[in-house]
Length: 102
Image 1 (cartoon, one colour):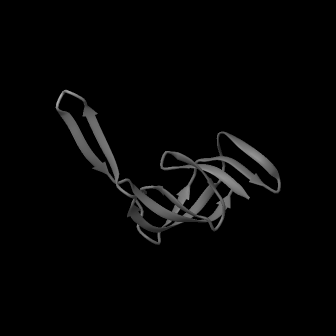
Image 2 (cartoon, helix red, strand yellow):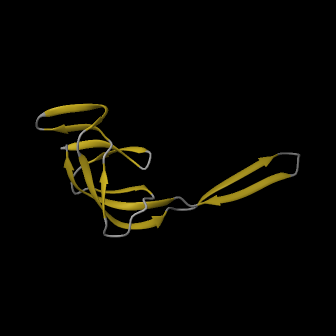
Image 3 (tube, one colour):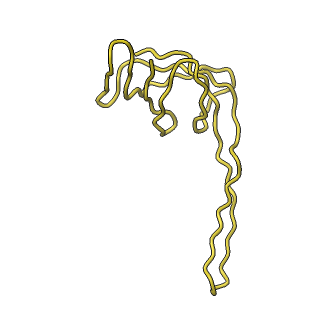
């Protein structure tokens, strides 16, 4: 059984007992998060699509928060004495999918 749902603006394929990194969620560690935007479910009954969403929820538990590796953004225009160097670290939340109820 798996589902495709929207978490933090991204569409992810989730399965029960799977651990995922998703964009930063505003929830404390150990807290349960309900995802209501289920786009598709595949189980023993077959494949069901929502238009736009299916009824039900995906229950996920927050394991922790973190920051990804640094990405360097470097811009240069030759012969114009223009150089800009910036760094960025994306924040993420690690979640464990507990159940799919659809």
